Image (cartoon, rainbow, N blue to C red):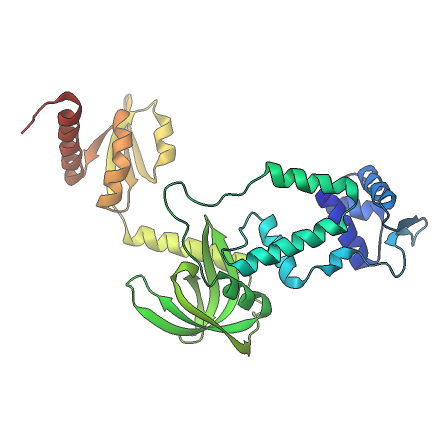
Amino acid sequence: MRLHRLIAILLLVESRGKMKASELAAALETSVRSIYRDIDVLAESGIPLYTTTGPNGGISLMEGYTVNLRRLHGEEVVQLFLTGMGIPAGASGEASLLLKNALLKLEASLPAPYLQDIQTAQNRFLFDDTPWWSEQPVLPYLETLRAAVWRGMKIQVQYRKISGEISCRKLQPYGLVVKQGAWYLAAYCEEAKEVRTFKCERFAAVLLTEESCTVPDNFLLQEYWTEGEKAFKADSKAREIYPVVIRTHVQNKGILGRLEVMNVEIDGEFQQITANMYDYESACEKVLPLLVQAEIMGPVELREYISSQVHVWNKMYLGINVT
């Protein structure tokens, strides 16, 4: 969007002092011609940008002029960044106020031709992260956690385990991760003496301390999270193996994409698929939609469940009382 490119040009030029049009074009993945068009719009709108030629030339702001985008405080920039990633600013009034203040300052900083872009975007795009049939988990301490990560401050927390037991810990927050609407904190636990992942909705209390902490130079959040995901999946597979044998026609290739396939054997026009469904309860949920295209061959207990379900359906839809 031209609006994003315009803001980026202002920030880049102000932070670096002077940049060539080709450098801006490369950084913003656009053409030099587009950069010059944006510079013309900015100049016409009253922002004193000027261009000099030669080896040391480039695009710069008039000496002494400061772009109003600098009026944004660090906390407001973080909120804009999170919102730009499609991450909601949080449920607290503090977060909403920071975001509104940042947007007001941003609107006040833009030339008139671009104000319409903001208004149009606000009217035509809506981010709704609430599930259809359930409530979004309440995260009363999200802003405190975010502040701790951003400022590098230790936190004293009460954390609710899966069992419901509450444990008290002192954490050094390293980063926040959002996955499918759920928030996770990567932090060094001083009690366990290792980096662990905490689900934010399980925090029963979070207190920001006066102690500072530093993220180790060799810690990379993306790398830590990716490795953690791999370990979690491998551990889950090792602990939760429930093979289900499915027989279906070889033409039903689409069925494979919906399963965690362990083995496939071809028998003429049919294929016998062995898929991992983790446990009996999960298998009961997953096999019913497959019955249109396939026969469940095993385990026996799963076939018995399907048989009992068919009896229920017969009684429900056909009025047949099968004993």
